[in-house]
Image (cartoon, rainbow, N blue to C red):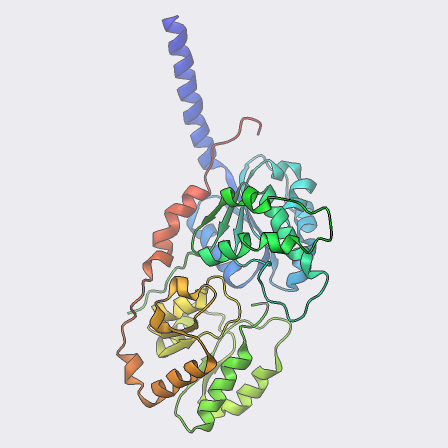
Length: 365
């Protein structure tokens, strides 16, 4: 009996050791249906920093069509492989459809990452089809093994809105969805690789440019850089503001080189958000790291990340702060940021992502 027990223990130890080695050698399948902005930034970072990631992506165009149809595209175009052990996807993907179309992928450890959620995402006008996007995200959460949000605001705004959202269903409503999904949920802040230094709906550009044009009309001296990707629809306010601001503009448009982008941030004194929606805010944190004084709405995710002195409640408050800064630029140039940056860095978050993206192989795979 002793010899038999010894053999069993030896075999068990060998199998566990072999499983660990196999797990480390297996691939992480990353699927991104909207490969642009922060979605692209995260995919590129994980692929660079973690071993054996296999990404499949679609360009960041026509967001609504990606949400509707990407699952079928990936079902047809991701090759079958026994090496996959983990599926990591953003919530743009309809994970439920993909798992049904590809049972081999449905068996993997499925991780859903929320950059934003459709239950509280603002829409310009109510449309019947809008319900489907939020509903798809709820279904994807039910299918996922782990659901990760980039902020507490993102997670809580999604979970606490499920009940109200499902009341749009006229009858025979599903029940207890929040209590089913919540145990799967956790927050891991978006990991930023900060520079080595010594977008879908635009974030309310009307308010932003209106305030700048007002400062210009007051005769105040300032310069502005407007950076960012241009997608299909560009609001008219951009061309109007570019003409109105004229000589006050230092930079205008997308800078494809990240080093050039950070160089512009390092030249700036203040970074402003007039967002009507924000679930994390990568660009704001990057700018603060480069020395900018942040001004953000006292709403959305911002109170979770920035101290109170950097928050404003009304456009009038923002305008007054900017008028003061224009008259006294030394206030912001000598200012030392009082918040924390380290918790949002890849250096602080990499261990959480490594832990998230590892798993023991299942016996049935």
